Image (cartoon, rainbow, N blue to C red):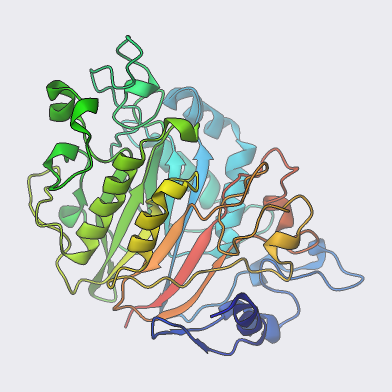
Length: 418
């Protein structure tokens, strides 16, 4: 489907047949026709302002039987977990912006990457109780009674000199990039019960245990091969109970150096392959942190959420990205910004040519860094990226001039659950 066709479907609410053979309905277009300017990204009528809008009517509509799943890189980190927790308890503007963004889009399940993770989950609890559950600028508070987080490989000391600087320790020698354990963690918030006893995490899976892996023998010592885990961040399988059936939230995130020159594309390719092998049923070699072997059982319904690929838009990962997105077990709805202003035509976004981009890159091309990808067995009824343009509802939450606005955008997906 062309970009022009997608925009037309979004405006009219008419279903468009997608290449993958499923029907993608535009919830934003349908709701825009139902009332004046209710959805994020819609322009404000002449003589009106965003202050005239009813915040409770600004969420893109969805069928009550649908499950809205969303993900975003939250960028809620700091010099330590103690600092992040203290900032949250003091009232962090960036967290308020994040919470308002989530409340406007009102997902049933939310996977946040790029959140510092502490040992007792206090950061996740504080974010839930003091931000998401509290109205932001008149938005409806969100009740997420079920929260899941676990350890991540970000900032976890390897005990080896992985960056070959002659010193053991520091972010370059961590299993996944980070200044301290949990620097770039992941949190799941859900309105539906989490099947805690069925959760699988893959923090400890060794890179060398992947068949036909891409480790260069000359680049790693025997010691390094014996301790280097494949996942730089997280890979979790978190089943939630919806209408008596399980839907698996496969949460994936990477923790990579800020400088793209320091990223190992070979490891990134294998990390992406690990995700693909898990969801496709081809990962017979995988073992989780409890010792259970094997991938996701074929036939299980799932949604892949998070940041499974490098956020740098590396050309070296293009083939791996295509492989993941074209997997026969996935659908790619190619969600675009809910907006009347094409991303590539905005002031200051002359490099932003990818309509499915989720990350603003001021000095380069905006990239698609976060993904909400449904399994092929699911019915998809809508998707979008929260990226309103100037003068549109919600713009202040993504305004590049705002010190509280993140670089990343929330992406959401509506799937049928019956």
